[in-house]
Length: 57
Length: 372
Image (cartoon, rainbow over all chains, first blue to last red; front, side, top):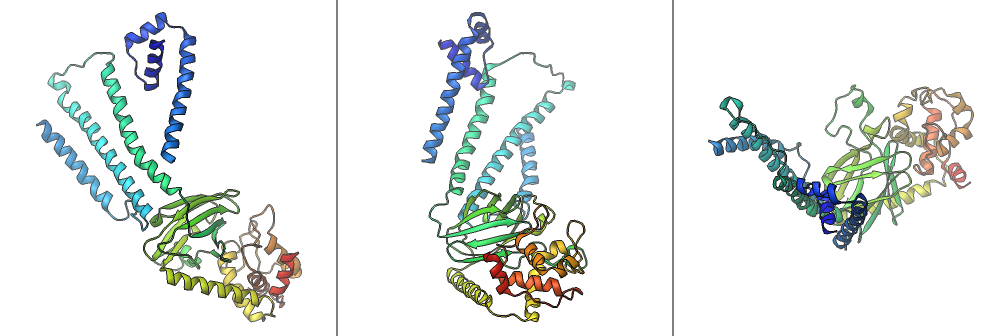
């Protein structure tokens, strides 16, 4: 789970280590990346909205 | 050698750029409001950040090209990836962007804060003029370009404020927060005065807000900056900022003039005075399409000189001015012109350029028509 989160974070940032990518393709299941990816995208939107609200308030 | 090269490159770049930046007319103006100064300093901050990035990036690039050239026996490195460098070149721009976004957002927030305005002015874009309405003051007028057509066609020498002068400027007091409510009657226009750092779209069916608090009395000029049709270039914006007491005097004068005009509605007007008034109205409102000599530009803009439809049917003539012609370029002037102006311009059109209807259209008739 932690490795899935790390990989999704790396994807958000745009940089991934080659070694980690190999491991993901050998051991990971696509569905777990999709679910964690969507969840974290929603978190990111919520975070940006929160910052914007704080900045405007 | 290395540092010397970098220094020379950086020095040359700065020497090239700085006169351009500081030269009057090349850069955006500092302006005469606190907000315009804030926007200018934000613009300069971001400009210098861009200059620094440019100098570093191109400096490294040209230095590398020179230092590691093949004639000196340089070998190309052959590696696939480097996570550390990739993280660095992603994180550094991210930090720079955030550093620029923080002051930019603060300025934007300030720009949109129209609260606590002391004066509200409705600004309406029309093809091709601006209309200003002082809300709660019962004062409204249109502001038309006053540059003579001869200057545009090259038959007369162009004067200093060519295409940037109007018959009636928007008059505002200094040190007073003024809220501008912008909209349009026909197509999208945009109200722009660089010195006031205001550039806001005027969109039919929407009301956009902006505000200005001018600190120095003076005349500030701008233009419509959204392509809005044939005479887009001929609807300038002029703002005259007055000291507060002068503004109050101007306001009182305008109100008195409006009352005089309202009284003029009831009395009988002579042909000559209607003609005189009508010529002014025609020159500022109608001449841009129908031409100063009434010859028009058929078929889009019919000639008025010798126009028998118009001369034979006064009711149709007046109705056309008041309500426009739907589906054509002729707008309705019901809300743009007052009854005296409509009566005067109709009378003028019926008796100018060889037209000899000989009749007058009285303001009182227009009032009745407008009330229907």
